[in-house]
Structure formats: C-alpha cells, structure tokens
Length: 444
Image 1 (cartoon, rainbow, N blue to C red):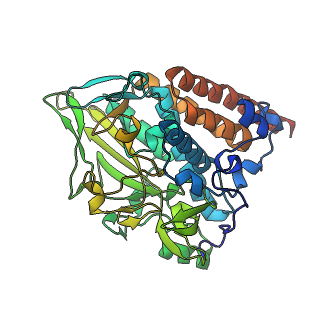
Image 2: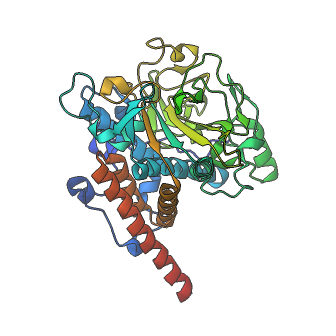
Image 3: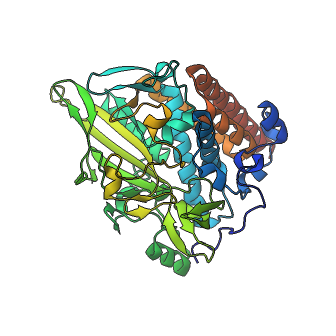
C-alpha cells in the first residue's frame, strides 16, 4: 500500500534513445538554450517533474570516460528533478531529499573542490588534477564527483561554521527544533542503526494510514554506523579519513554524527533493471518488481560529521570540523540493482566493481581516489555565500522548468568558470523569482 502512488508503467522508449537519457525541450537539447528564462512564464506543474522514463540504458556500463560522465549527469538530473506520481507524505520526504542533494552540489560549486593527499596535506584545484598516466586533466562534471564511490569532505577551521553548515546542508535551516528530527528516529536496518522514514518503515506507514498524521523524519534521515571514521591529527593539524570493518561506535553523540538517507536514484517512477528483471524505482530507492513487491534498494547517501575541540581557546564553539558526504549503491546490508552493500564491499576488489551509476569506480574513470582525496574548505564568508545560494534556489522551486535547466548546468559544470557561471545564474534567477512572487502578493 505504501507504494500505491508509484506508477509502474514506463513510456515506450528505447533504453538508449535520446528521450530516455535527457530532460528538457528539443531546443534545449539541440542548443543548450534554456527552455524559458522568464520565470514568470514557467508553469508550476511543468512536465519535467512527472516524466516516467526507461533508464535501463543509463545504468549499463559505458566504454569511454565521456560516455560514463554523460550517464552520471543524466541519472543525477532525473534523481534531482523527477517526482513520479508521489503524493502526500511520500512526496514531501522525496522533495526534502532532492533539496538536500541539490544543496550538496551547490555547496561543492561555491566552495570549489580540491584534489589531493591527506597524508601530505597537499591539495590543488580539482580542475588541475591529472590521473596517473594521463596527458591532460580529467575535467569531470560536478555530477561525477558523486557518482564513482569517492567521498567528499567539507572542512572548516571554525567549529561554529561547521555546525551551521551541517544544519543548512541537511535540514536547510539552523532552527534547533527542526534539526533534531533525525535524532528521534532509531531502529534496526541490517548492520546500520536506523530504519529510514515513513516511506520505507512499515511501522511508520501503518501509523500514517491509520491516523492520517505524517510522522516521517525530515528527508528520511536515520542514524547509522559507518565504516569510514574520520579524526583530527593533532600532530599534523589535519583531518584524516580512515577505514574500520567494525564501523564507528558513536552515531549520534555531541560532535559525532553519522546519518544515512535512502534515495530514489535514477528518478522515482522510472523503469530500471535489477539482476535481469525489469523493475520500477520506488520512493527512497525501493526496487519494485513487476508484481509490486520490494526486491532490494538502490541509492544511498551518507553523511558523517565530526568536530575536534580547541583545547587552548576552550570556548564553546572553538575547534575544527569535517563533514563527509558519500553516495553508495544501496543502504547497508541491502541488495542494489548492481550488487550488494555488505562486508565484501568493504574489501578492495572484493566487492562491487561498479558505482551507483553503474559505471567504474573513481580510479577507473580518472578521478581522485582514496581516503581524503577530494575536499573543500569553508569559512565564515564562504558560509554566507553558500546560504545565499541555498536561499536563491528555494525561490526557483515554483518554476520547475527553469530550475531543471539550472540543475543540469550545475551538474554538467567541469571547470571553475562553469561552476561559477551556474552559481551566478542561480542567484540572478532566484532573485528574479523572489521579486515576482513578492509582486504577486502585493497584487493580491
């Protein structure tokens, strides 16, 4: 019953046809021109939100780096824009998840990804990263940094900045009443701690249908263990990412927070394939077989936040912080479309060889790989800009066609210039949408 709202039939499109791999008008596909830059003319219920595509071809292994990166962009674009036939609480949770992931891509663009080595502490603009044996820099689109098994870290030398950034990234606010949501939801999900939101939790689903009250947790976030601990090395004054087969013990204590989020990767309601069976992507990535039964889960986001106090200054907000973000094929102890997230997946070459998008892992596509390979720094001034951009994007939600085009430009950005251009457009169009909305209120 909880997946009643998901449409299980897809349009008759070929898995590799242009319509099944891109979103937008013919003019946009041909020229890259926005379908409509006048936000006042964009309808609220634009078709881009409710497409039902066949995405099987996007998950198939591509032979060239360019094709792999293109699939990354297409799959992320569908993940961040499509709503399927979701309604009520399921739609609310789904949109919260989309907003959270959009904030991650915007933050990466604003702060500027750096590639380097955590042991030496040497990092450079990712635009200059050249893979071993390559003649030219990789120049991967922003979408690909979240598509090949690597993790991204946001580091700050100011704990108060890190705390505020964490709350805005996960919850879109620093309101204490709203940022406590995930702490109140615990259960058991395989090896992980937590059980997700109402859309994945039968106990919550039963409560909702019986009472009509939506008790779902914000964005379906839940506490979970992590096999990727991180700690601050006081000798080198650097954060270092590690690995532990046992996982982290403290998942929600002050200064140590570890949460997961199951996502409908590839676009909710779309047709996919799992181990040779045609399936439908359900809410929070539930894999639904032709009979409407759950046959696994595909798409998982992981967030780990740690702080280290400044023992010299000793005041409340002193110290440093690190937020680690990663995207995995499925929730812990769960089968995905392409494999499984289990103990074997923690062993190099012993687990899944393909990423969340079905393509090679980071090293295989010329991306920075290894612990602490990609990061960004954030200070007070940068935090203000990040929050400004987050706010601008909120105003574009009422104009989904324009928002869709901007999201694609963000995901496709390969250089600092392109990332800055996408952020500038978000600010401009977001401000325009805000002023249009204010004028509409005054007219009413």
